[in-house]
Length: 444
Figure: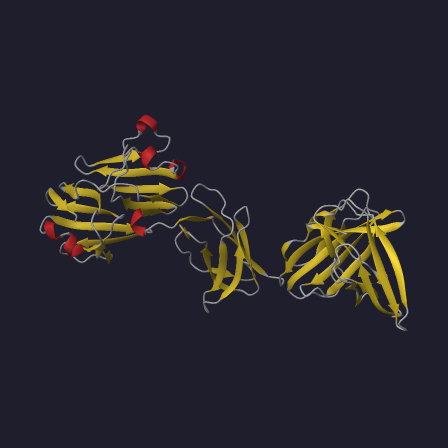
């Protein structure tokens, strides 16, 4: 026999009437006499073949078989093994996870005169077989007893007749049968550069019970499918050592009879970086600033590799009260050319990404010039309460605005506003602040 990992020998003695008491074999590869066992199909054989070598044997192998009848009389039979099969079936299916109808298929060998299929559970119990399959047939639907979810192993047996004797090669496959699911959630996981990430564990967690009810891993194309049996609301969790998702958490996904399948937008994962050194940019508008400065301030260099993901960047000349704009294809029409620490920026992303600023440098000064009227700025200091951050500007500022995920928040020097208040200032965020007069803002 020729498995995909080497050459084996097996011995089969038909004995449906149980006239044999024992069968022993001796010969190459056998230290002591090897006893065959009676099999459920009605004969004597090894449960597993006898391994010979990874390479095809170059010498003739002769084995002696001693058959002892129930009456104790032995009969010695010698068999010379010469008819090794060189080729075996390839491209076996099914593989991986299977739901629904099982169909066995394979690419056959040119000189086979028949095939067989053997199906086993993980305890090596034979469940089903199909013999005498014509050489022109390489696809057979399973028609055996009902199978429970679990792992199954199957052999595609190729038979070649040599000198009137059948010799066989066995190709082995394995699949996991999963309960038929009525619902599924699918998607892909990619890196910032768009390349697929394999081996990411993706889980569906029941929103009501917090239990993990489905789990899968991304394949080489970064794709995954979660099969779910019951309707409900589910949260998606993605995990891989050394990586973290860039996308913000999504609200729970609702599956029901009219909405049984959901295809998620691409999930982007990046290398874990300390939060202080990572400026996360979501799809759509981002209102951000940069607490450090790149070695090369030109936008094309500072955002190297991200230009195709950026639709537009806006900033503001606080002194001249003019908008500044940069587009990837803007060329000479661009009025914004550099990224600096201090200003605020509106950045529109075609897809989510992140900027690692761990190699950027601290600005020489953390004092920002503010001018009368509106100023678009960032915050260079550590997280600080608004009252402490603006303590040096008492009586000079009028109102400050912040924006996050489509929601504005604001704080007026003296009036109550119908918005959520700005309570703290954070590195990486941008702010509009309106000044009564010009001032120098110390941001330590």
